[in-house]
Length: 311
Ligand code: FES
Image (cartoon, rainbow, N blue to C red; front, side, top):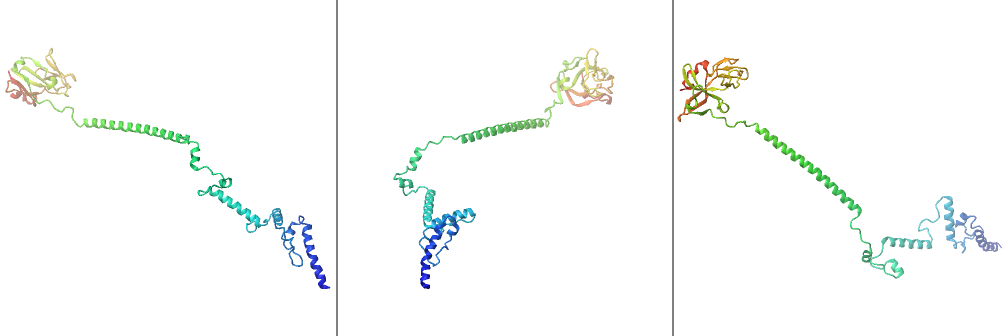
């Protein structure tokens, strides 16, 4: 009896186990997801393994609502059908990423049976490239502008340096000019004024004043007719007196000193008579004046025969 009851109970249990999950599949998805809904007798019925996909979807939805990890999230946890789909999708993605194959027909060509156009044909049919992009033209324009500015600045700098060099050269020449005297050759101290016949008695010759600074006079001095050469330098402060023919005297324009025809001072601030230069008759018979020798009256030098030529 006991075995019969157990057998009856064992036979009736599968029916109850299959009836229970089928009665409330949607009302308690969590309970249905539990694989522990096995029959009491420890046998697994065919209805338990026949609904894995339904349980997965339900578990995913339940997990999404509960905020927890959904059911199978890895490829290993996915069912066989899902695995196959994922594998196919991954292979397709890798094929797309790798691009068209060189050694075989393209995927589209393999699928459609039509060969894809070659790269050369694609390049031939591609629109021509513009000869000069606007950006390149702009860059070239900027480069040309910079070159012009550089050339202009360089030209101004070159002009400035050239002007500076020219100015420096002129300044150096002007500075070097001061290193040399204005008169390179002084007049000789000895010079010939002509024959005695060219100097009549009582005559004061003034034509040698500008060139030699001397008067040649033929005058009576102490009862002796002489030809002598007077120095045209005032004994006061060095001015050049003027011969006044009408007044028969030398008059200094600076302070008014006056000198007689023989050179003796008689008015003004001049302290002493004019000086004489040495004079003689040269080998050719002309009168020759030597300015390297001077004779002063106050010193009694006018008595020196070198200070006059007797007529
Ligand atoms: Fe001739 Fe003074 S310089 S009078």
